[in-house]
Image (cartoon, rainbow over all chains, first blue to last red; front, side, top):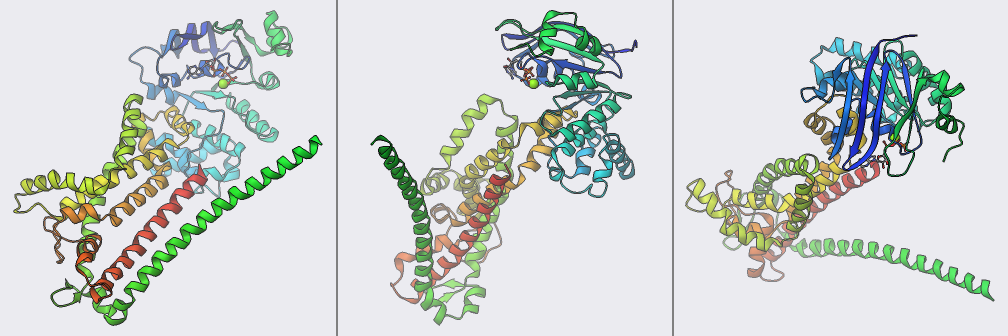
Length: 259
Length: 300
Ligand SMILES: Nc1ncnc2c1ncn2[C@@H]1O[C@H](COP(=O)(O)OP(=O)(O)OP(=O)(O)O)[C@@H](O)[C@H]1O
Ligand SMILES: [Mg+2]
């Protein structure tokens, strides 16, 4: 399986103020692939994934070094339009965060930001996005009720639908199922698996089985010594990482022999 | 025995908790009783007025001239109060919400951290002081800008009342804005909204019930305010529908005339009557505002 490269990361490093938390990461992320990012707590997985839609811009004094290109364009160049980037690179957060608006308005929020659509067109987008997020059947009769009335799992699928509605190509997910029950988690995993047909997905997860189940590629980040930045220890096919890791540290981590 | 000691101690603790909860309960009861007493006192003292003066003449009377011919028409005072209050709301609400949004959402941290305490201190300035400052600044300003012969107008009162309610409106609105979960801001930004779109499409609507409560509480201060408006609205109990004329509010009337009345007389009782009306209005406003505030606390 040799796919097109969607994202290129080259000598990437990240600083919070003077503290360097990520260093020297180089990897290519393939199109229509699910890439899992694993590593111990605090190693910088969230920091890393927020790189791809420049959400780290919001943090004062943060600094990026190296290069991150999406579709061949370095997204940290000065002339990059962050709005355009975030349309292309959507994000699903750890805790479901629907807006306290109706289900319909949640989905329509993104499209309405970026263009003026007719009512029919908007309705079509909402229906289409909810269908893709496997939520349509559950909510089609209550599109105009408050999204906060949905269950946690439904809320998270709503958040995914919200991203799909702006025609993203890449979806970043930072532990999207960690606050959900097993059945909701199963639904999210099935959904992610379906979405890879049309989207490039990067997912942070703490759950080794989850990474093994759903991803095709796995990247393992690790901080080896306190006060040192985390590095990319190994990046390979998920199969290989979980059956025959090339690095002792990876093996230790995935078999749970790690602090 | 040692464990007996322990047992005693815990018994004492239970007793302490009991005392504290009783103390809180008793305080609550006391404030309700006091409120009830105030109400009873107002009713009692205004009884004479309401029983001897025709209620219809009171509520629809267009003249308030208690000393000349014992006319107690409520309308001029109500119009005066409404005019001043309405003007104040018109000024204070947009300004207050605007500043709250700026401080809560847009200002750099340093600006926010300096402005917030300053605004909270402003809320504690006694209204007589503000009235005096208003007399020296707002009144001449209004006089000059509209080339009036006298600056003691409804507008001057509105401006100073707006100032008085601003700290309340700003600081509570800002609290409401602050209480909006960051996850919502992030979700909006991640969908490609800019800061401004996120502010007015997500943050402000989410904080809206808190902002409404802030406005209501500000309103409470505006309606119940006495000294400042007494000093700078010109004190003329006539019906005027212009912001550039002297008016007189309910509170100002009570403060201005109470000293001249005969205790127990009709005029005296009439002032308690309008006091009763004011009490009910203020109580209702604050009550409603409080329910809003509680609802928000429950949500967040
Ligand atoms: N806004 C911030 N300012 C300063 N330091 C931060 C900030 N956010 C995170 N850090 C630090 O950067 C490091 C990486 O944090 P990050 O949240 O990316 O880790 P993570 O791998 O996602 O952890 P977890 O698995 O617990 O979610 C941590 O040491 C953390 O303390
Ligand atoms: Mg994280």
